Length: 263
Image 1 (cartoon, helix red, strand yellow):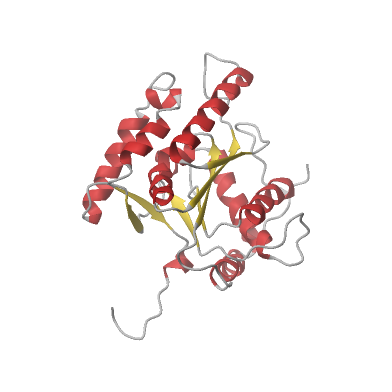
Image 2 (cartoon, one colour):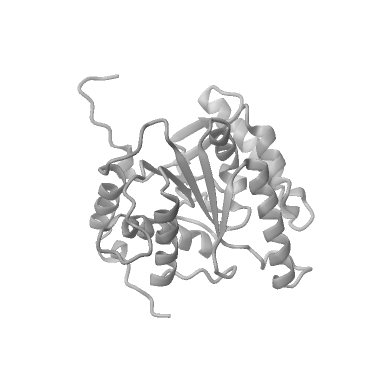
């Protein structure tokens, strides 16, 4: 597959400005109409890092959609990828049901997520079909290449989905109000908590969802996923003056505020 030269490589500031214009300057739906699209590299990434936010918005009456670009089928040393992939898909469906979310599965393999036109077009088509008002995905720096690839693909897909001339089966979508990056233990480098969401009433739903995954329950990896993310939510809650909270980061341009006077 040919690899496209990304606009962000050659002109990062121009690409960021174009993306910001596509996200922030477009007409949007009413403020009370929200559709969240959470895009993760592997099944389980989205639920661990931002599942409590998804549970909260579902409780508030919003539409919630999860896109898993891969199943993360290579993560079990005791099972072949095909068998573990089938297990992860069942677990992802159960987790989505626990959150009240719709779920979409990408066609890509664990550890081999491409960054060319094909992946960008796939994600752009999902964005155009789902029509999200808010997108949550991976932060730009990670120890896992699939996470970094997801970040870059989503950024390009958001721009592509907003362009009139981008050929697609669906009409362009320019109603994304905000793009947010979730806090993931594998994506910690340079992540800075910016926005805190109170999830005190939604932690039980989050626990039920992530516990659908064997790797979270402790059956595969020695990493204590459940304890880590619950403790992290307690720490972020303390920082925010809440019992539990989940932190998100945003692009630098999204942090600009223009006011008539100090708030």
